[in-house]
Image (cartoon, rainbow, N blue to C red; front, side, top):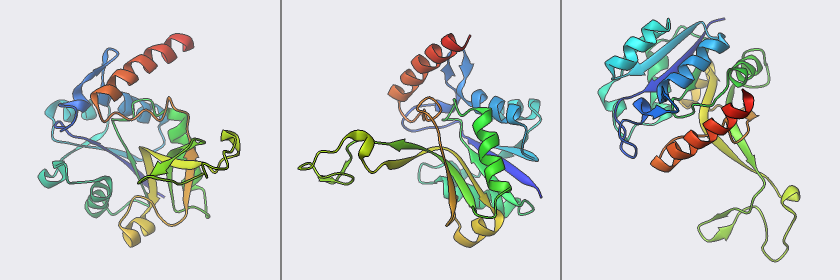
Length: 221
């Protein structure tokens, strides 16, 4: 059995210019997930998909493979499914494909290991992803989706809403080939805390990540 991890790290970003190369508490954003994948040490091969020479050089220094980002997949119209399907087509020899993101700097090595082990050792699951379990009052399009305002429940009794953290995905080759999607039909959902779920898409997210990182690492010293 062979497994591969793909980490997309492009130089350009629309909402947060140069996001992946920005500093976060004294370290480049992209370095966090690379270091955590290196520490987890579970994948046969790690590929960094990038259009940045800086990132490519760093990837090689970490013992990873650097692959050049396909120009059309660096556009804002491209998504995670497009990327993973492309990676599968370029490297079809693996049994499992994992996708992790630089925008999730606090995805811990222990979580990466757990998701890896649950997926590759399971006959029940064909894919996995990390998520938050939210017991809050949610609305969509002006309509409540998990409670009735006239019968106000306690938050702990509410139907939870599961939110993908968009930090980690894994899928078997067969399911990726069949569904052309990074989540199959029988996913294992691994719930993480809000620290690990930090996902940077805006300038505000970056400020939150800086603050949260300082606090968490201070108390863990």
